[in-house]
Structure formats: structure tokens, C-alpha cells
Length: 140
Image 1 (cartoon, rainbow, N blue to C red):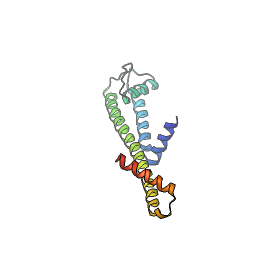
Image 2 (cartoon, rainbow, N blue to C red; image 1 turned 45 degrees about the horizontal axis):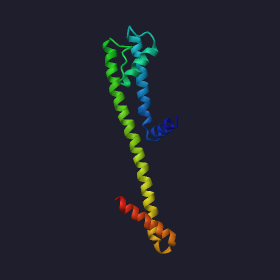
Image 3 (cartoon, rainbow, N blue to C red; image 1 turned 90 degrees about the vertical axis):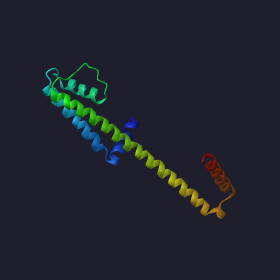
Image 4 (cartoon, rainbow, N blue to C red; image 1 turned 135 degrees about the horizontal axis):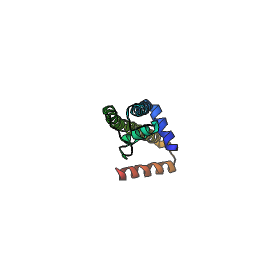
């Protein structure tokens, strides 16, 4: 549940929540149209279940569509789902990359600050700084 809240917060901060909400609205509209147009689907929940199986590319086969309009909507829904998943994934990855870059920049700023105050540092601080430089050089 916490991960969903974090994801929702990231989507809201980046504006990608509009994409996700637009997708959910389109999914619901497709479900309603399919429910109305398909002779074999008599309940909205069955139409929404069908849309879910299209979006997730599971395709159980327990609910199928036969009309041209429903098939076109199924194709549009599946393409839209792939695009939304790609966009949301890209937004989340970019957000975390920016956080990592910011933390590295802050760490570098603190390191440079210590270097500028080198004569003022205590013996322990100098040893700590020296250890960090050795570790960095060893890893790079």
C-alpha cells in the first residue's frame, strides 16, 4: 500500500497522474460501449473484466467480443495501455534518477566544502576525508 502511495505522489508531482486518469476514463468508456454494443455481454462488470484482460494482455477467453466496434476499441485500448505503462515507467525512473543525482550533488558539495576548510579540520575529520577519497578512488 505504501508503494502505491509513493507512486501516486510521484505521478501527481510530475503531472503524469493526468495520463493515468485519462487512461482509466478511457478504459471505463470502452467498457460501457462494449457493454451496450456486444450482444454476448449483458453486464457492465463483464465488459470491464474484458477490458481488464485486454489491458493486461492476459486474454482468458471467458468473455469475447464479436462486433467490429468492440474489436477496434480492444485494439485501441491495448495500444493505449502499452503507451501509458511506458510513459509512467519512464516518469518514475526519471524521478528517481533526479533524486539520486541531487543526493550525489549534495554529497559532492559537502566534500568540496570540507576540502575548502582543510586547514580547519580536526585529525578525525581529515582521516575520514582521506578514507572517503581512498574508497572513491578504489571504486572508480
